[in-house]
Image 1 (cartoon, rainbow, N blue to C red):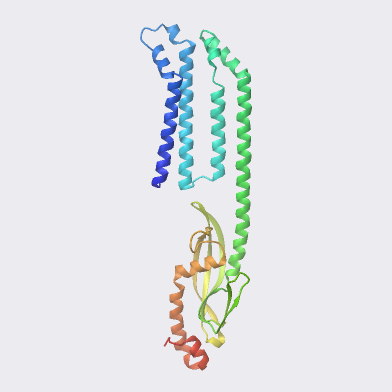
Image 2: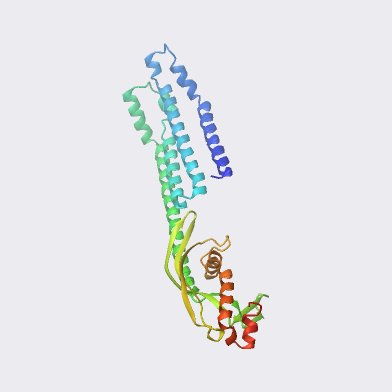
Length: 318
């Protein structure tokens, strides 16, 4: 994990701990428990409402702190390692927060506990009164609202992501089908450059030879790879086997596979045909292989070429 992630994780856990200690000190919980636990304290006093409330509050604050720490750790580490989808994290956060809110609001109030002497029957009656109180009903409704809203948002998030991914996969498969027939050529008989609508130039190259092209694409599949969705496929390569006058004559000679992430921010990554073709060229060092093919083909067909063809395709090669 990165140093920055460690910093935010430890800082957040420290803040949660300090808030826990501050809540205990503000309510005098540890002092109350200590005073009523002193040796010689009558059993009736030690088991009265006030120390019981203090212990109940301490358990509540401790559970809130532990759950908050666990949830915060989950969020920070998931941002780093992405082992859970974002909508799962959102749903879990909503459930934990609603639970903690309901638990804190259903805690018996000072007034109820301090107005009665503690006993098993009384404590049960107080608990029942607390459950029926308007405060608890309001907290229950609010907690339920948080759960419903979280599930709606996380479910909609998951649906939109899945929908977008399905559309992206369909588009990528069409792009890979259009990849067949594209490739790399060492020299071109004619190169024209015409001004484009955006002020750039549209380059048209014809009569390339020798060439290495993508002959076929098959077994396109998609899989999760860390934070990215990865597309994998099998492909074959074809290379020129005839003279420039028969440049369409080619033969398959290699069968490979490749995976590409849907990440347009990184060089040679992406699902468009140009990105995949560029990545294939980089992984197989196509340009070096193309230079070797040019030397071999010029040796084979040099004396059968016209003067113009020799100057275009084999000048400076032999």
